[in-house]
Length: 299
Length: 284
Image 1 (tube, rainbow over the protein chains, first blue to last red):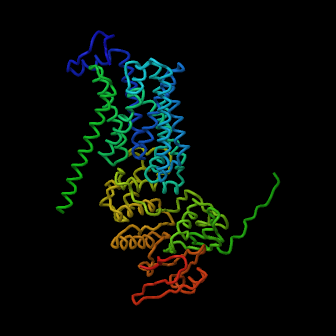
Image 2 (cartoon, each protein chain N blue to C red):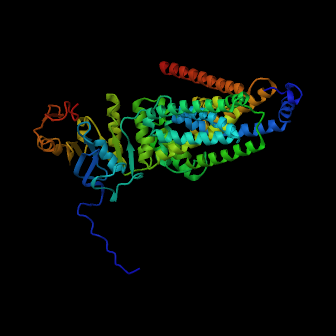
Image 3 (cartoon, rainbow over the protein chains, first blue to last red):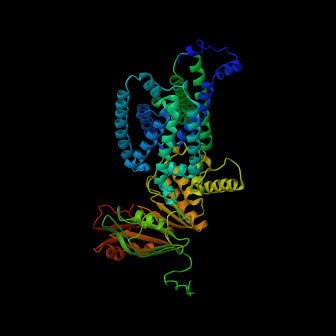
């Protein structure tokens, strides 16, 4: 993101404190950090459940749906954040309605999701052509931006995150049960089907939030990679969730800082950092498993 | 409101103290077909019961009716004197043939804990509160009971079928149920694990005073330990001791056609001549 408006490309001084002060001197960067922090926490937590439930494809589709949502909002002249929210939640309900939602019927779910995915991308393309000449805006929807986050956007992000987190805290334990062991959960009286729908809506909210920082194409950087990394590193649920949030926060803060000091887009850095973390975790786990096998072979 | 004197209806003659579950003229109709009907079964508390019969005869349906997951089309099922209802904490349940995704990154311990309070709303606060301490002790205790302590902290996806089965039995037991429903827990296991899991279930039944209903394909190794056998076939059921149920007379009556039961020299039962199955499942 070019910084010409602010008197040339800022350069880091390699003095951490001075750099942080430099990072936060502008209001738009403060907003970016506040929104980024909220988004990362929500994406880390909801992402943990998404990876646990094997619903990454649903998350992917919801993120693509954000594109026509944002483009449509621009077309009718409302804030893209609203378009993202409406489209993501509506698609979450659509996926829930078209698929059975239970673990065993994931086949039906992927087919339903794939169909929704194709259709919504086409609609997004139509909206973009109708609007015409907003290539720059499309670019921001797809790949993310951090320079234009307004105070009201921060307020929307905070409010939506508050609602999503409150709901997640209320349904957390039965949702975990239903995600791990749907059949026994159902026998124990857990409303598995209703929880599946509720979770898809939460996922829609999380995606709509995250897309405002990373863009709709790169939502996965914060939604999948930190959660998948955390689950590679620990099988302890509490620690896994906490680790997913920490990784998402680090990736976002570092991504914002690097993007501020360079001319390249934030989406690239956040995604690259998240991907590096995931690769690192896979390598760690591969090494511990190999060591475990050697130990077993020797015993 | 007018004063109406309410008198307790007399208890039905079939209800005895100490009955774990009781079917009365019960039937289930699915897709226009009776799976079974006019089923009368009583299982006493602490009984060890095998449920046998050909594939598709409705053995799992029987368990689902007990769990309240399937509504009866006729008759009634009572669990400890109350009508069957979903989410009954008096019943521990292990569904048919489950193996966990190798990539499921959850510890065995967490799986067992879900059996205790997984259906409760909210989230557990990490490591605080007396309820949490009690819960952790109970989980450790039941894991010890099934002999899974050594691997309870490893991710379930990495465990063998026998190890997963022990943890699932612990999950079913952790809430101290009076009734344990195990749907083919021996099915996907090798011979050694089949024997050790059967021994574990017998031991739990005796020491924990739990009524166990175990769906099995091969009832022979269990016969010396069983209190009753429920035979499900041809839309009907028969219950009694193995010696009463697995006989030419009972099975012929159940199937409405001649069925013969032979006893081999080593005491195994072999059933010949069932009309609708090529292979007999009470046989080894």
